[in-house]
Image 1: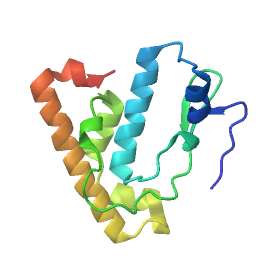
Image 2: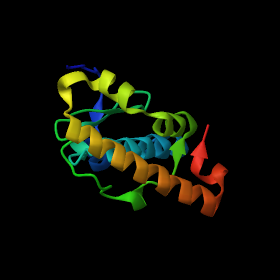
Image 3: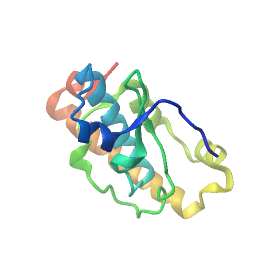
Amino acid sequence: MQFWIEGTMMEGDRVEQGLRPPNGLVWSRQVQEMVVFDELIGNVDRNPGNMLIDADWNVWLIDHTRAFQQGDELRNPSGVRMVRRGFWDAIRALDRGSAEQAVGDAVDANALDNLFKRRDQLVAHLQGLIEQRGEGAVVWE
């Protein structure tokens, strides 16, 4: 599947030009959502060339061709520092049947096994952060 977004710049170009997001909090939350998602799907190829930024400073994640290829371990759990409430709830509620229905034949059974192992590690990591720092410091609305 392909989806094209007009009027964007790559994250690498933003950094090279020294452009700063107008709202640092919103930006950091979008980046954290990307980090959590990439850990969940085992995306080993996130780079500044596959993060697009639109005119409203929304981050669009492209090129997931190397997702679901990683093993069953999180690559960088220390990079996961916070999560949006809806995403947190969805990660914890994710079940095998829903995942299989969503991905169809695009992802094999072993890759789904690994996804759930990473999911369990993400949940444990985030739950540990919540216990350590308090829910309000880790989960945002």
